[in-house]
Length: 126
Image (cartoon, rainbow, N blue to C red; front, top):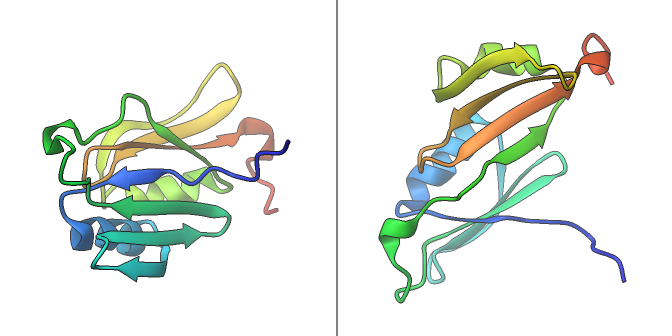
């Protein structure tokens, strides 16, 4: 058996606002949207995310996630320079003892989005 990928489904109360954040702030592209289902799919490079309004039986006050979403990126310093004035900061860019340079922001729903690059990759353009 092989797992072929992971595509998180993020809940939102406002589809247009969430799509706007991911597309205009982070540069994702819209793959598909179905307003009858209150669902959309977006992607950037090899990262895919689904956005949905919760089902009616779900408690909307529980929108959130008890963790964070960690994006492996290249050129983390450049990304930090772009995002630090566009998004609410969770923590500023820093090089950690585990040899990762990373930072975190909040999306429009309060989800924590972390972005990191291995220290030994910094300066490489691959």
